Amino acid sequence: MTEASRDDVLSALARVIDPASGKSIIDERLVEGLVVKNGHVSFAIEVPAARGPHAEPLRRRAEAEVSALPGVLSVTAVLTAHQEPARAGAPPHRHAPPAPAGVPGVDAVIAVASGKGGVGKSTVAANLALALAKLGLKTGLLDADIYGPSVPRLLDIREKPKSHDGKALEPITKFGIKTMSIGFLIGEEEPMIWRGPMVTSALSQLLGDVTWAPLDVLVVDMPPGTGDAQLTMAQRVPLKGAVIVSTPQDLALVDARKGLAMFRKTQVPILGLVENMSVFVCPNCGHESHIFSHGGARAVAETLDVPFLGEIPLVPAIRETSDAGVPIVVQAPDSREAAAFLAIAERVAAALSAPVRPAPRIVME
Image (cartoon, rainbow, N blue to C red):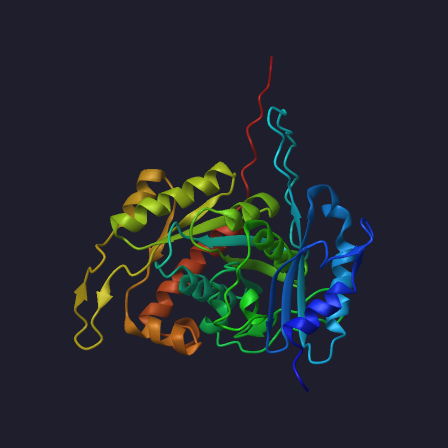
């Protein structure tokens, strides 16, 4: 079957009429970030903020129109609402943020985050999820890094997610955990050139329009930093806690502190810090070297009064198994490295099962 071209998709979208204006969504320039790759199509429809809650039928019509094209295997259409800037001199509108909504059928959602990239956060997130599953928890792994998804490579997933009802996507199960990533829908080398509102909308749909249930815990591999994706998670999902990953060097720890502070400001509990690449172990002689220093994350945890979850060594086996798509917890479950991840998972599981201490009551006598 011949693949649908970009022009085919644009022609299909031109047949979708916006009832608010009577014009097509192409003529109104509502379509953003169109990507057509190997039969898989993704795009966003951007409408004014006031129309956001009522524009879902428009998104569905656009998705259906493109889905009907010959050669189209999947369509991912997200809806974004654009807030017009306030007029000069106009008073700002202040609205109370909506109460976070949970993910149906998911008991706990935890974020694995870092202040900066390059500290091995995604590797830690994947192995943590697999270790939690080994402890008997029904576990999911959401790749929330829209710009740089890692889960497809970490778990060697090449298939596309399916939808049985045409609305919700089915997560892909691998090694006993449910997974979802924007990387399942686009090519590995295809860049996502999306603005912030499009990213937050896509992330919201990956949380709400995927049949995650039933899960005991959903591990979310966050993108590095403290931007839109992090705020979306902290404000729209009742996170049970956050795990902060850092290397022991001072440069990484400075940014780890920022990530920790962001979660605290958004009232997300800190489950603890993980020191990744803590010590290099020579695969030939077993000699240990502290390439990135050692003990920095533990010291920060003590200073900031948060739990220290453990250390992960810097060894070739973790890199090799991650690149091969069979993480160390699966490939070598009896290894020292897998034991380190399992110990961290046990501490996280214990924190998730601990009762939440109620807020103190103030009694006036």
